Amino acid sequence: MITFHKKPGQFMAAEILEAPEVFASNAIADHSLAVSLIDLNKTRAFYTIARGSSDAVANILSYLFMSRLRKPVTSLPPSIFSIYMDIQICDAAGLVISQSGTSDDLVACTKGIRKANGKVIALTNRPGSPVENAADLTIPVNAGVERAVPATKSVIGSIAAGMSLLTALDPAYRNIAEDASASMRHLSHRDFTELEELRFALQRAHHVYVLGRGAGFGAAQEVALKLKETIALHAEAYSAAEVLHGPLQLATNALFVLILDTGEPESHASLDKAELMFRTAGADVFRLAPQDKSLSCPAAAAAMLILMLYPVVLNTALDMGLDPDSPSTLSKVTRTS
Image 1: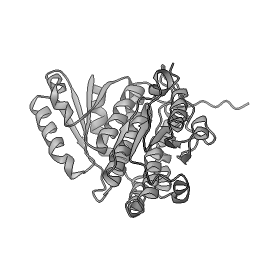
Image 2: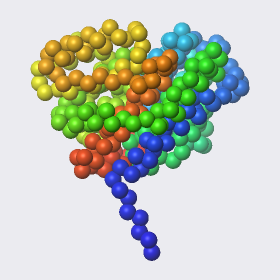
Image 3: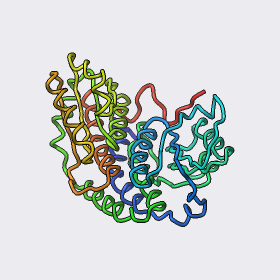
Image 4: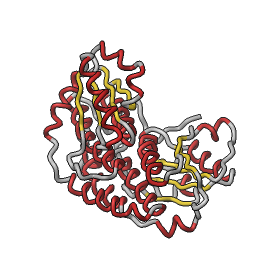
């Protein structure tokens, strides 16, 4: 009888390698017919509903949708339907993002929005899930089974699935999505050895700020979450604009600051200012931008930054003797009450 001995991080490493192709195929998927059938023409606003990594995806997509559709996109706490009260949904649609599609509160939100006469689009990675069954339309993430507890390829796939939804709503976006798809396929063949400096910095760190602006703030949320999940490192995500309103004071203690730059021209000034002020205050600062400077989609740039950092987080955990596949206090599906 052959016994299979899993190596620490084996699942997460394999799933990171699959992520570029998951993104590339999802970003150019055509959902125009399915989206047209639920008639979102009168939709004046979108509400995102998600938790954990999916909430970081929601943040990235909210900036993307607002910039293209010129309609407000904001987050609703899932508990608003599951343990509090129903709310009025007027000419709005819900975007429910859930990798498993089984979280009770997200199912309750999906049903609650439809009960209030709102349309619901779900982004899920599990076909036939309760969220999918309750939604008006599902955009599949198609990342395949994810065995590591920290989500990686499904996060990257969810960003791309949101981009394909945007293309269905705004056909002029297709060329941008196609360019992003090609860039991500190229990413899978690149060498990120220059990020070893960041890996060593994380091993020394006790507290980390991850900063971003626009779509980069969602990327910062995801990276900070992965640092907590996989290496038990205290990490907080901040907008580069908000971090100067108090958290800067903590730079007087030992602090590592990771700045994620998606290349959005509107963000440069605030990122530059935050970098200068943290360096002046004595913090250890590392700024990272996508290698592909031609990317014209901030959401794709955010996905690329996240994907560049996943191997850093994985290898840092392994260096510390941890198994990032199965952090001791986490499970794949979060149950709330």
